[in-house]
Image (cartoon, rainbow, N blue to C red; front, side, top):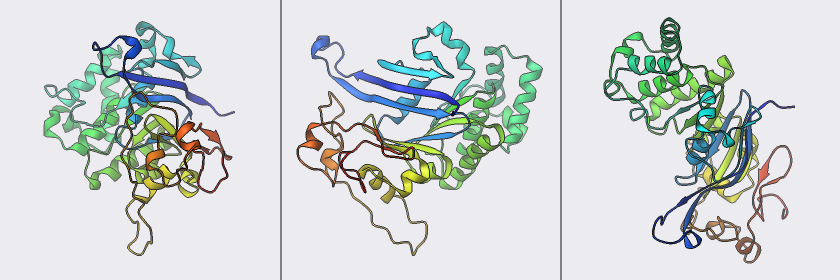
Length: 328
C-alpha cells in the first residue's frame, strides 16, 4: 500500500463576509474550500492548480493549520492534526514547513539572513554548532555563497531570496513542505533554477511537497500528481501526465489551452471562457463552472452539483458531461 503522509478528508473553510452586520442565521459566507479530499504519498510532489481566488492557497494553509478548518479531517502520518490543541500541534510544526509566494516579505527586513536562520535553531532548541553547520551546508546546496548570510533581505535578488526561503524550510529537516506559488514572483529566467531545485529536493532528499501554482506548464514540469481547483472545489485530479494528455474537465482544458506554444510550428487553439466567474458567497446547488462552460446543458448542470468520481487509472473528474466520457 502507498505510504500516505497527508490525507485531506472532506475539509471546508468558509469566511464570513458580513461579520457583525447580521445574525448568524442570515450571515453570508465565502466558500473558500468546500468538501475537498485528496492524499499525498511520501516522496511525491503534489500540485494544486487554479486561477487566482480558486482557494488553492487556502488549502495549503489549512493543511498546516495556519487557518483552522470548519469541518473535515487533516491526517499527518495517520494522526488527525485538525483536532489537536495549539500546544499539541507544536510538536508537528518542525516536520511541516512552508515556502511563501513573496520571498522578500517572508524574511524579517531588519535582520540579516544568517540571524534569521539562527533564530530557527533557537526556537527548536538545536545546538548552535549543529545549526551553523546545517546552514552552511544548505547555502552550498542552493548554489549560493556564505556571504549572503551577512546581508539584509533587501540587498538580495528575488531568486536568491527564494532559494534561501527553501533552505530555511529545509533547516529543520521537515517531512512535508507546502510551496505556495514559489516562482510566480520571479523573472522567467530565474524560475527554472527554483523549479530544478524543487525537483532535486525530491531526488536527493525524498522530500514530499504540496506545490501550489496557477501555471499548468510549471506543474507539469515539477509535479507527479495534480488537483485542479475551481471556486473552492476539485474539478479534476490524477497523475499530471494523465490529466494533461487525457483532460476530461472543460476548465482544465481551458487552462491547458492558455499555455504558450512550446514550438513556433505547434498548432493549438486557445479556448476563451465566456461569462463571469460566479460569486463564491453562499454558493447555490449546481455546477460552479456552469455559466462559463462550453458543454453546459440546462437541467443537470444548473440543478445538481457534480461529485468528484473515479473514472479509472487514478483519474478523477467532477463533471456531468466530461470530455471523452459518457455521463457519470
